[in-house]
Length: 95
Image 1: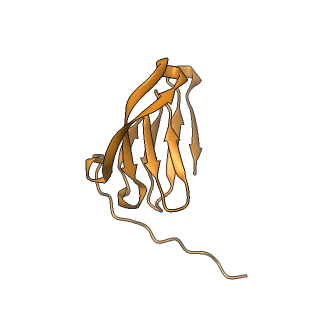
Image 2: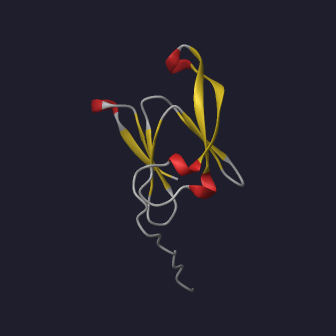
């Protein structure tokens, strides 16, 4: 079976501002209601960029909702590392 090789991106820094598309009201239970929420273009996110929740990342096939007190970091192969929660209750997931 052939081995899959993923193309690695160059480090682009932590600032995701170039990927911001818009802001919109979104409901988050954690904030007790609707919150002005930045919307990011997932196609413009690059390795190293960090997004603090609440946020919405729009992709070509799906959207990612980043809840408050969570962080998304884009890794070398364009996947999202999501850290949910803070302190001892924090946990990590890769998507």
